[in-house]
Amino acid sequence: MKLSLSTSALDAFIASGMTDRAVIETIRRCGFSEVDYDMTWADFNDPVKTGQELRSALADNGIRAGMAHAIGFDFANPRNRDKVSTLKNCFVFCREAGIPAIVVHPSAVPGNTREQFFDMNLTFYRSLIPFCEETGVGLLLENIGNPMDPYFLLSGSDLREMVDGVDHPLCTACWDIGHANHFSAKDYPQYESIKSLGDKLTAIHFHDNAGNFDDPCDHIRVDMHMIPFMSWVGTVNYDAVLQGLIDVGYKGTFNLELSGGQVRRFVVPFEKDGVRQEKLRHPSLDLWVKIYSTVYEIGRYMLETYGVFEG
Image 1: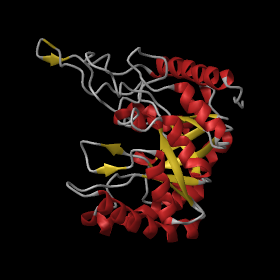
Image 2 (image 1 turned 180 degrees about the vertical axis):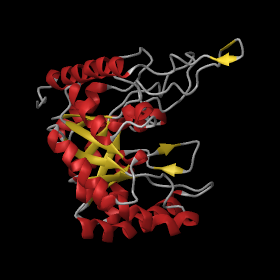
Image 3 (image 1 turned 90 degrees about the vertical axis):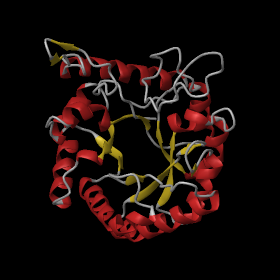
């Protein structure tokens, strides 16, 4: 299994003007030869040109983008249905960049039932199949399940049901480990969910969080995107994940979707002489490279422990 890193780990720098080429060069410095390209900051005024520029940057640095993550999070909502056509640029961009598949999030509306949630999202995902067929770029459905919100993709069997409902060879599953752990890991264990997905599982997002903490320990259920081994409050069972991937013959990358090194959004404000002090809101780029070089070694250690690391 090859290690992969989401380009979203560099969001703090991308927001300040870091180019795609610089992003790819920086990730390569850390040891990664695979990336998940986050399209949040992409320029889609000319998806052909920008896609080709990314293809060139990837090739020049010996990196492959095994998947991408589409812009936007609420396209399936009927109120946004007129915006679905804008996703076509994401597929065109991926075709030109040589990216084989793209993650597109489901949507929910307040109070929707499970049946309504599935009907709405299946209609939406089926509407994207012409984009897949035209570009040859696959569609990846990602699990989002939260008892406090009207999403109903809590388990691997839920996600498998939706993928099977789309019923197209270019539609497969991306299992987000952190999302699965966030609220429902006790009721829907990772290993069983991964086994349920089986051959439909072609991509993962790996990160840790403090989901399912037992009382009386206090915690906040936040989608933390935490680096593995970085805190004792992380509750993802890494062994269950790796064994599940091995047992289903998973062929995708071990993709790390992490927030370390980004802007710390919720820092308590501090002012001196009436000026907000924010020198340490995020690390320097040199320190970021050191952090993610270590992240690469952490991922390598995890995969080597199970005998599946591919350099």
